[in-house]
Image 1 (cartoon, rainbow, N blue to C red):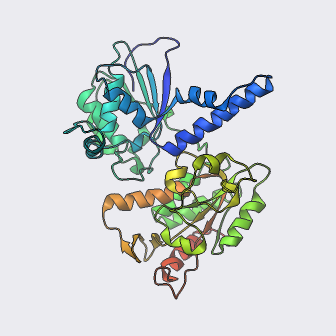
Image 2: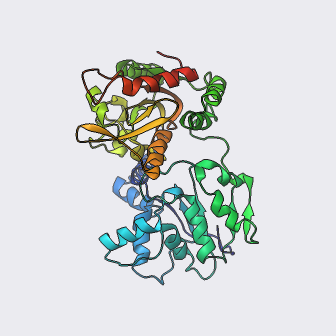
Image 3: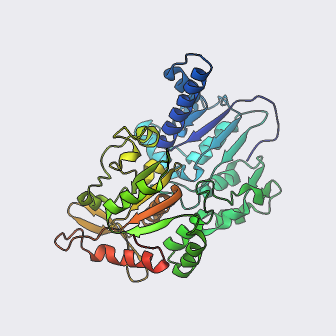
Length: 402
């Protein structure tokens, strides 16, 4: 999406509402900057390196707040790259935040609409690049890519719009709004805008398709895809967490990173030693070495969908709780409150939970072990029935046991 025009050396900014991603990217680039300087015999302080990186990589909410101060001021940047653009807030979420935190009543713009309006303040040209993950909305108030398109259609008809034709796919939930603008002269479709080969899972580009089939309960299709990827992408199943950890250590070579992943609502994994509510620092988890107990290598602190979205490890153990359980050809979805599981009925919350497992199951570059606990017949919150059918479904697809 962009206004017409071009000029060299205009500043750009990478924006994300995903704070763990912003923190990890900033830190890894700053550390690399310091190391490069050291190889040249120069002394570079890590604080200064972080400061310079933060000028380019920013939290989208900080960016938004800066241009709320003066609604006429154009951004310094002419090019804005919005990572995980599907997670930008809808109107209700944005208005609620503005009223509570900024004391602005009756705010009338969704986050996508306001962010476009900021770049639209430029008199010459601007470019917005939206990076979109299908089925990646994992929290309330996330508008999806459809809201960006609707905002352009409502308020910014002077912008040239370039779209991937794959946005019609179901996981993007954008087909209905694309139909509203597809015949307009300023709207263009280009199949090159879709990243058809997964950069995360370089051993098997079909891993994402496999996960989609599993979650969509297309067992036969999932089995067929699994057959085609299993030689390149090791994927196994177990009920023994200790065995899962052992498998990770056996598979990883050198500095290849591995870690434990779990849903943020997987609260009864606590009985197995996995505390999804315990504090975890993504910078230490993703970047620190095997001698640091805070790193992923220790396989003690789990990372949830909120901490790993947009990031990845080489090898992962996805631990599966009773919040998302297979039963009678459907997914049962639950949240843990007090001392019991409560069924999730609202369609948006059900989608968020499904997407949480989509995120978790697509974080490993090279291979993955899925651990579904046995449960405990003496614990009403962890009955074996909560887990057995899920394990059976995954096993039926063809995932081998270890």
